[in-house]
Amino acid sequence: MTSGKGINWPELMRAGLNGLGMTPDAFWRLTPAELQLMMGPSHAQVPLLNDGLAQLMAAYPDEKRGNCDAG
Image (cartoon, rainbow, N blue to C red):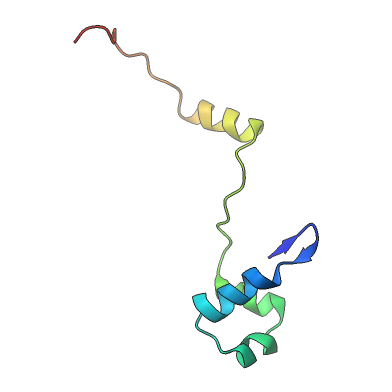
């Protein structure tokens, strides 16, 4: 809900008005915490950085398969 520059109001308004079907009046009566609760857990995608890639590779290592030239 927040970025390095503060609250992302356009994104929150889209979520409240379009996603949750709220009226503008109902949206503006909510606190940011209430809106976040209504929106549910955040599943925003974050970039896969080196640590995340290393964990993913450890969890799902490549399998050695036969020679690819056999066909």
